[in-house]
Length: 230
Image (cartoon, rainbow, N blue to C red; front, side):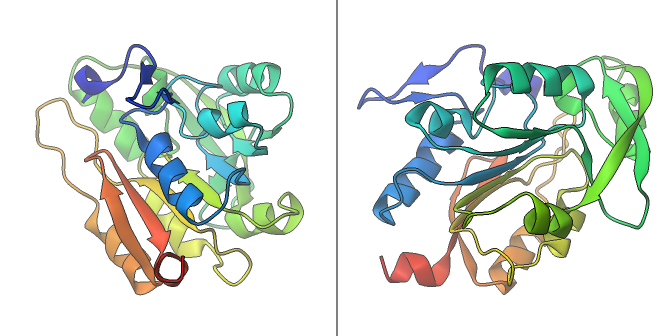
């Protein structure tokens, strides 16, 4: 799947530039524009980099602001430096009562993960290595919603390598019901045996979101009622 990673930003036919892996930011922008939301408030979980392969940098450049959560200390520092208007948090999202956890820094930083199983699986392919393991503080997703989100959320990007399903299952839709989610729904492999994470898709459907688009790597969901009433 690394072969599919974009090495440059790409302008589309109307002059808009995508910074995301497969144009997910432009898809989200199209949806939000149709919902009359021109400057969405966003939450970027697993932000990774200020602009490269970012699902939210397009909106930041338009003047939107949001919250970026990135556990990698070096990547967090870069995001904080380049995106001064965003609130940046150097933490991971917890899925149990633990206050910190081992974070596996991979030789390819897009594969960093809190999952030991995933890290060892990546390493087993022979092209990736676990460079080091560091302790990183954890915050529960609903504590983030309570303590750091002071506006209506419109867009959530979720990419945490192996824990996406657990996090979205914990998300309290009564606290916040964003119009659009972009969630990674493919497992990473290097032998072309990747699989879609259908439990994520099924869970979002159960919560009255619909699949608007799927780029194979990510699935973009929109609130079904909001879209119907646009």
